[in-house]
Length: 225
Image 1: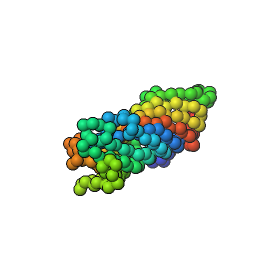
Image 2 (image 1 turned 60 degrees about the horizontal axis):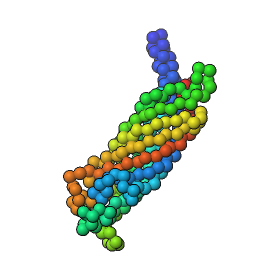
Image 3 (image 1 turned 180 degrees about the horizontal axis):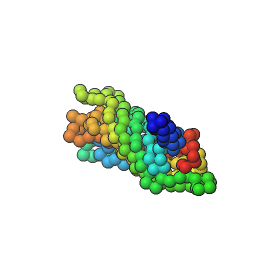
Image 4 (image 1 turned 30 degrees about the vertical axis):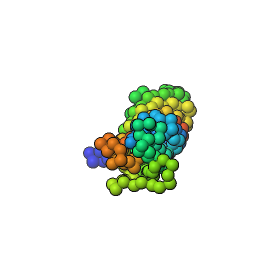
């Protein structure tokens, strides 16, 4: 009897846990920039590029979520805008693709529906941290030259730790929007393909800023959020 009661309680708990979930898909549009040997200023206008991406978010409670995301952008940098480095004369560009998984905490997350089941718009700031992989095969050369330079220990795949802060707005029961900014350390000096020719004791970073529109396709069964 105790065994059957335990099984019933376990199944009930599992059902309730599953019922508390909701899921959504999102489309990201924004801007990116990188900081490294060829762009010491992380917000240099000449090195800002468009970023686009997709994401899947699973809420376990209104405050805690898990996100899988992918994004595509470009990075670039050049010595030429900096008088002190014109003699080196390097120029770089790369396509960058990232994939990451993130845990999110929505500080003010709460039910999108009031106690009579009517939709109530919500907003909440949030933070997230995760891990992932970025791939960027940088093409490095001298400014104005078609020739390419490749350092001996160059690499193109990098481990990243995405760290994001943002705010989430509920626009309707099915549509939401997030605005966020996130930085990614890559734990390598080869994101831009320049290390021995530059400051090889520093690591490269890149930053993504954007807006994501999200569609809730799997709502919480009990209407809690």
